[in-house]
Figure 1 (tube, chains in turn orange, purple):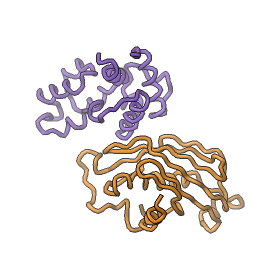
Figure 2 (cartoon, rainbow over the protein chains, first blue to last red):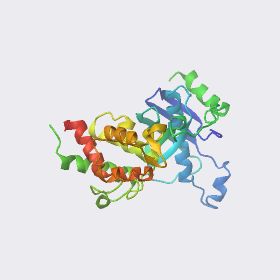
Figure 3 (tube, chains in turn blue, cyan):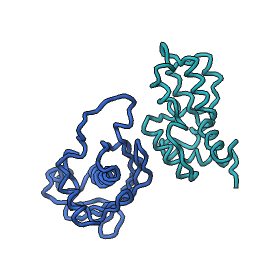
Figure 4 (cartoon, rainbow over the protein chains, first blue to last red):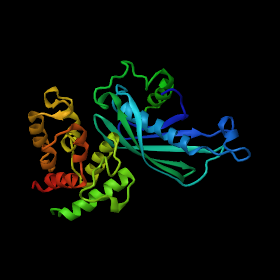
Length: 157
Length: 131
């Protein structure tokens, strides 16, 4: 994970469920271009926020030993625009967890209003892709996101 | 209550429509998952997960789609074809699939064509009804 796109976890139930918060701000430069005069959060970045929330949940379920990669967007429906000043609540649930992969279901809400439903699939790449080799070190879960996960552990949820 | 083959078919159809984004009428008995329905490797896992949910069963991945693990066995493949030994192993691993056409020319590139909608339905049928 090379960058962080969610602000904190508010709930975390190992292997089952994770809830995170993403605050959208006009300080995000891409919003100046997307679109000039009408800043709105790109939907693909809502998928990214869900992928990080759900991906960390999947990674934690395996003690961050596996390299967890987003493999497929199974379903994705958007119900409303998201604009600067909005606080998004991302709730991810584990649907299936196997040695090679995991599937998750998630919803994004803003003040209780449903904004999006996003179902994803993650691959544990060392267990897949027949014979291809990947670097030893876990390049997915690096120091970059340590603080985010530490936050979860400190909150003890 | 045991499910009939038609009932299983329509559940499988729904799973494939959702997993692969295809239309109902594309999911016919003889349609191949890769060639006709455009499934890629990660889709097979998605299909397995969805089938487990739809039928409330556990499916070890190599049970439904065993070809990948067979191809990594050195004894089983020679000059791009399955050996006698490999073919026997494949038959053992895939009793839910009709291999009669494949046996005459066991080209490993054609392994993908063995995964048809009906082989998935047969597999579920065997799991549920022990046929």
